[in-house]
Length: 264
Ligand SMILES: Cc1ncc(COP(=O)(O)O)c(C=O)c1O
Image (cartoon, rainbow, N blue to C red; front, side):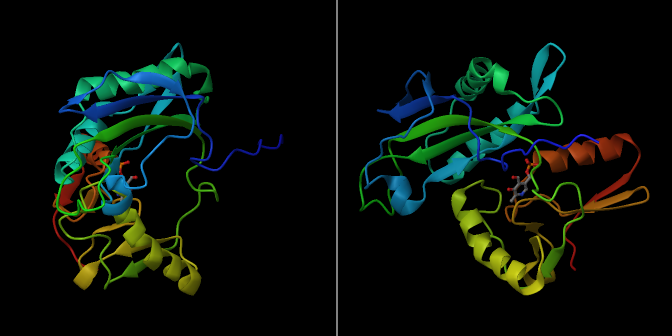
């Protein structure tokens, strides 16, 4: 058996280039492809004080003769929804799609063979320099599309995860769960690390008052013969594109799909 080459941990390797656009005076600048490098930001930037930031994550796969992007339109729509919720300038969907394609085209050689993929990571953040803007949205913002060749998400490879069912904590503020913003991940980190140390689990399933929401980085679906159960879409958790895809496939295959609130 040949030994598998050691792969970089998920997200630690970036491609050579990124796409950048700036929002100023009420409109987006044309986007540019630039070498990945440090960015300049005022220490008074809105994002550093008031967390005006959201992001997306999705993959492009190498196929014979082409690179296919998995449901980019849904991810762009979710990013625009996050931006609206955070009162950030909404990325133009066509421009953002073009930025993603431009990065892939520039870095086509960096798209790994399956089962690897190129992970795309658009980020949007408020750059207005004003430390007194807690109740004022950022009027200026930057949109960057990063790309990262990835292999296994879980460093331990394909094995079942141990999950702590936490029936007290909530992953994020109830109205913010559907927003893909750094603050939600920061909020889930403490409980996740404590659970990891105390119970040797990989992840926490947040179920405040016993009501199942999601884990720190994934939706939760129960599957048994011919039947699939998951929480109905509301503001408390991220509306996963994988979840939507899975439900669509399940319905196509005749599964009974139930989307409703349920407890532990
Ligand atoms: C909190 C959270 N829930 C769910 C998901 C799954 O989302 P998707 O299926 O769109 O990748 C993610 C993905 O990163 C996530 O961070």
